[in-house]
Amino acid sequence: MDKGTTNTALTQSLIELEQHVAKEGWDQGPRLFALADTAALIKAEPRLAAALAPETLSLGEVGPLRVFTSIEQEGFPDGKALDDALAGIGWPSTVDGAALVIERVMLPPDAEAQMPEGDSGVDLDAWAAAHPQRQEVRIAVGVLRDGSRDCALRLRTRDADDEVLSGPTLVPHLAEALAQTLKE
Image (cartoon, helix red, strand yellow):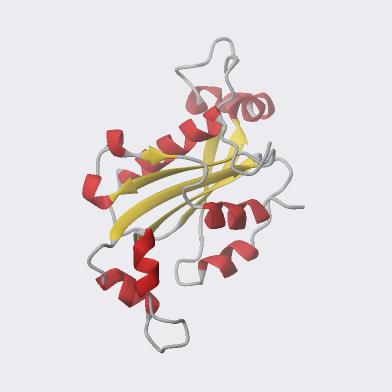
């Protein structure tokens, strides 16, 4: 699939993953997840069947739709620059994809013209956090080995499950950085 192509199973997985993380509230550190095809995982580990997909299982089969199981990776560094943390990650071939859930401050496109130059000595994170048009968001971005990408995004000011936005191009640079972790 092309970059930016969405995958229904990935979209559903990211929305569910964002909702899972949302249950623990705001102000969390980044969380990294491996995505595994649930049917393949059950085939490899049949005793996991009831725990992974109890509602959809019939005689050990997941059904016609592809479903992903998210497996949280403990110890993802919170104090390290995100680019550096992602650059040090590689996944085995048994992992079908990866997802990252992070919280960030986003600004509208017109705020970019107001942004101080990088070499001005201004702390850009502090500047963005103090900007009157800032929006705090939780982003769940995911990528698959076939090139599929998607994102689920929740605004803190619209903190409800039915207000979660999704789309493959919401955070393209973050999706690309996450996709690099799947390169062999």
